[in-house]
Length: 307
Image 1: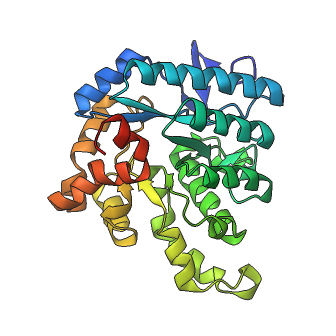
Image 2: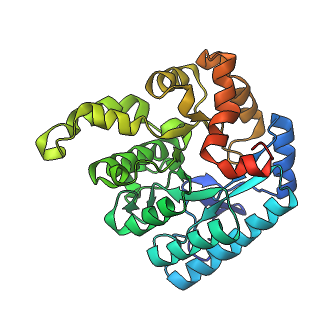
Image 3: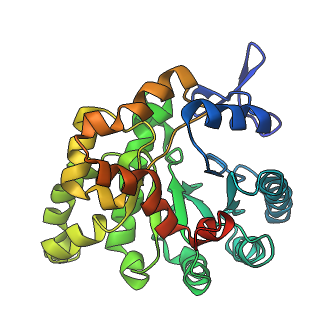
């Protein structure tokens, strides 16, 4: 990333205006122990390998990272799963890597980004990816990426507001291009409580009914947007959880944290405050902590010998 031009300040690498923290397998397991987490899935945050301008080199790096992730999961088979890193925006190479990860490495799912160098989910060029996901019945976790027009962030850290809005852009594009409707059974998790979607869904659905925006029935749009799963990383305040509970309910929420980008000192109160802040019942918390994730990722159930 440094050779690709990502900034370094006082010896620290920065991505999207935020410092890239140190991470190790041992520190991750220690963090899980501190948080009371018995199993977690590993994924690579934005930008993935999209900053590499050569398809062959991007695929090579993605393969190396995926093999390293597999090594981690083999070291802790009952504690860690992995999500495949695809060498997007190179579609042919991404499809090949998807098949390798799911068929050969037996990963629990696939990681995607809201956009790769400005190509958003929903773009027809990505249809081969969605077709392969559907064929392999592979569940997807979507992490936001920096929008292609960086000036919108006004030189502030992009994760602060642009990540939530880019999540909305991706879901909106999936709706208006019809790509989500083409693959309605694909299980997809969007990060950070779905970004700003719980607040904006009805506005999007209202505009989408107009002829110039697609003429999609209001109820159809709302059902599609509420059909995704959202994780609760950085989405644990009472205001956020009230909106999420009203929009999609506990049956579509999964536990998540932004570690190591969010320090443990900040992650712990957020994670432990979900039930109180969301006014969730014990039965709803069982869904959020365990059952929903096991429904999305059946290979985790197999790894833990739950089925």
